[in-house]
Image (cartoon, rainbow, N blue to C red; front, top):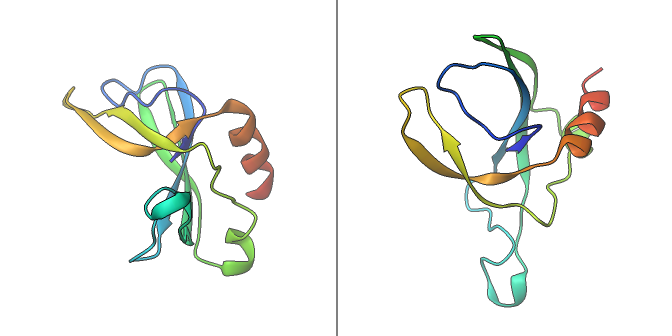
Length: 108
């Protein structure tokens, strides 16, 4: 997940854009093998935006020619996600407003 801001789904207050990327089954994130090498192949990308209490999907693709533009940054790490019920879950992603802004151009 590449997010504009920290992900807090409790009230969906404020505004946030996030790209969810589905990895190919069996993909290994960097660091999964010795020396930090591994396959990180994305098979789908979706863009969600929440603003002032509502959430909507703005973009989704499984087209390989579109997906290749969405590189997974090397600095992706485990990050906390606050779910609707207030519990915290850990996922892989990064908060990077500049990267989200660049990815938004790819959805047009």
